[in-house]
Length: 93
Image (cartoon, rainbow, N blue to C red; front, top):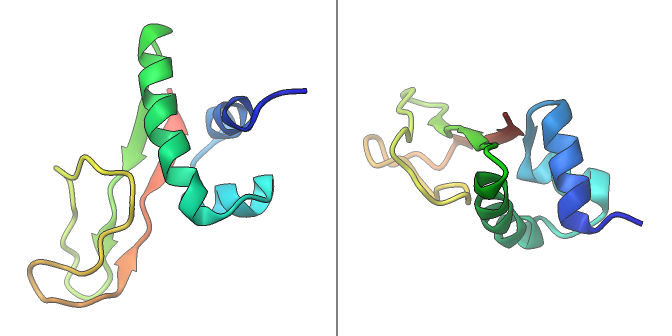
């Protein structure tokens, strides 16, 4: 039986998913997905693979959080202060 992290790696190898998608597919809380993602990023580095992130973006002004290192969704846009933020998406390359 694969672990949650192994299931997440398999899921992200097949295509892009948001944290909400991962939580629904694997039946875990969205809040629990983020610590697993940071651990998966470290584990994949030793296998010469990479956890890629499609950066979140503001839906109001289009600002992209390109330099963001955290896996969680930002609370609001630094440019226009809107809270309408597109979720980051993750995949394994």
